[in-house]
Amino acid sequence: MATKKKNFLKIVILGDSGVGKTTLLQQYLNGKVAGQSKPTIGADFSKKEILIDNTVVTLQIWDTAGQEKFQSLGYAFYRGADCCALTYDMTNQTSFENLDRWKRGFLENAGPNDPSTFPFVCLGNKLDKPDQRQVPTVKGQEWAKENNNMMFYETSALDGVNVENAFRDMARAALKREADQQITMPSTIGDAGGSLKLNQKSE
Image (tube, rainbow, N blue to C red; front, side):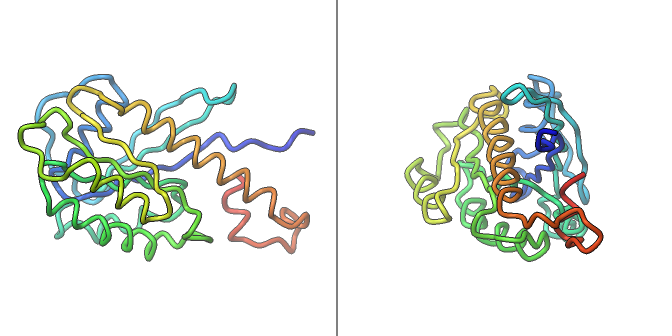
């Protein structure tokens, strides 16, 4: 019997309030943006099925609160994530400077087995506002490179630029990590004495 392929992936989108997380998700799910979105309280999720290398993959994408007073409500939803999108607004320098805090908070609350290989992607949003840009492209690229050569995209949630590509590559990275983990897992996994932590991801 062929090795079981993982057909379910959990993606978490993090970043300051107002960077466009909800709008990015709307654009990816619907190919359009439905007016002005309200701030997310706690976390909300949506699902989308995509085809990657002849495998149907269900993405469960969690949109989390960016406002500080609601952030702790979202921590519980980090666990079990297969990929994390760290998002900033390229017209807002502070949102870029806060990426380190978002990444640290995710790792502390998600508790991935190997933080150094966990797939993150960095999204610099609002490419449709070049006249208001505060964060140069090279700054985003440098930060991503310094953080384990993280994938990096500049996106426009409003116009859809790079949104599809970013989510597809997130899914590919998560699937690759899952495959690599299965290769390194001991053959006893799945037996009565197997590790519960490892078995959680085999469903």
